[in-house]
Image (cartoon, rainbow, N blue to C red; front, side, top):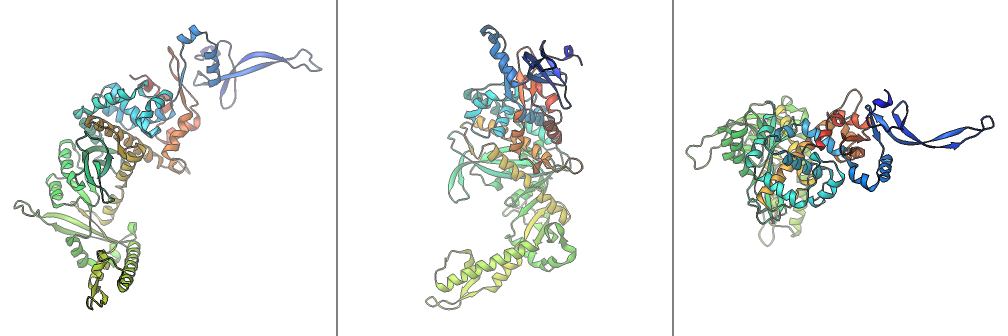
Length: 550
């Protein structure tokens, strides 16, 4: 390639070829290097100003600074060189395209609103701090559409987005439509604290510490195989998790078009919820408490089967059985009928042994306290003892009938399902639901939403939409980072965390000059290989237009 065919190459520049890269330099003078054989020899002084990448001249930072300083005041006003950190946002933008997020938002939100949602999600993932730092971050970072927002403008646009209720619901509908028909969806809820005074759903609710706090409930539907969230909704903070299932069923009847199976954690198994799920023909698998009388009765009836070799399950290093059951009808409802379900009981050997040892240890310690007269009468362990003496001279004895009943069910866990699944299939499905917990971790920690700092209903809805976008992007990266790539190549997760991966790309800068196409600096081969492992191989060649999409 001739020098005249290279774009943006200065007229006086020369090219020095090497095996890895062609470097560009200019001659700034000569120094005398006379020898006895050649008293008139001179060496050229070289100043390297950049390199050739894909047929284009890419200047280095020193050359850019020198060029800008060399301009007159009038020229400086005409030519504005700009260089911003672009690697992380380019990577996230390409992932937003790859996952269909951008396509699913188009036509529902304006281009500026899309750029704002993406920018806020990128900021949360890259910076992970309060929005007051967004203007400073945006001044040194290439963002979608090159938007530069003040705090007041951010609030105004978020309010606009939050008012677009139909657009938000249709966006979730499009995310649901991307699911495969053999997908499983985990449903779960969590509480987020808020000090807002004017948000309808912020209510005082009980905390795990035993007190009360102003909270809002956030519920998520997340795919097992795709590892992608497809629905996020808020509800009042004083609403029990078990009460949120009814709304989920109604929303799914409107938006759901696939025969998906829902997977629930413990705490959702009310008779009303089960009846509504069956009525809506929604398949489900649900973890339930073993303390329920129906479950305890079935454990006693089938206890002898939990040592039979045919019931051994390798995945849990223990035993499991399946029992057809009739779930009780709704009390005081003459139209309610018993529900045909399958009960899955599991007894992991190692867990049961450890739990049994811990139980007997606590029992022994409590017994010593009883004999010494310094026991806590409100302790749950009190039920396992009785006084064979009198009030003044007690003689405490173990109640072996109750102890035997406890030991027989200790370490068990149970599921119920509307489907006739193999026991090992049921346990594998449930184990893959842990991704919804990781989604909440992303929302609360990486998106700085453990405590909400918005004060309007509309702003809250838009903020949660930003969190949903961020959850989707991180979920995509986690899934790709877990995949091995080729022979003898370990998964990226062994070398990187999500945060360190973004940091690796911060060396890539986007240089823009009015009247010229923007170009990238420091887009190394190593970074291209990492992007390819992430399924984002075109990140450096196809994403430059994100900076100019207004």
